[in-house]
Image 1 (cartoon, rainbow, N blue to C red):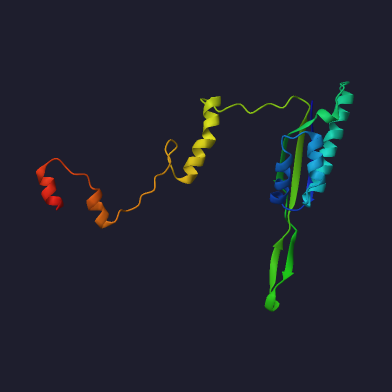
Image 2 (image 1 turned 180 degrees about the horizontal axis):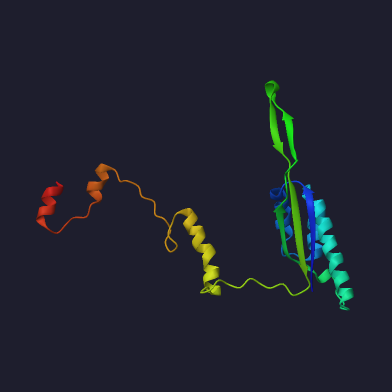
Length: 181
């Protein structure tokens, strides 16, 4: 059973509301409400009302269909924020030296879809196995450090000119000995 609720013309930009929406996507309804209650963002209160409305819509649709549904088993299947109109929401703000800055105020529309079906786990990408997924983090760590995945980086120090002659191995051919001296 799915239910949908939307809140339109909320004050505030869609970008700021998306920050809050991203925190609750895919979570259980109780967990989502707890997150929204303690989130220190202006959009959280309006989004919480929208989630509660979606819960009420789900229970009402279940009653009409004569189905028993537990509101605690609902989870946020999908949620998104759209930009609303900003017409007639432009203001003038005082600026230095008698100037004025134009300011656009924004509206946004929030839509939340709840479901009582079992949440599906994300399927692995085609051609990927569990072994390759577990090996990926180790490879990325080595790439960040700049080394190869199999061998650590070696430190290269330039030897001093005098010690280079004494450390150089003696060659078997006579031409090399004369050129080294």
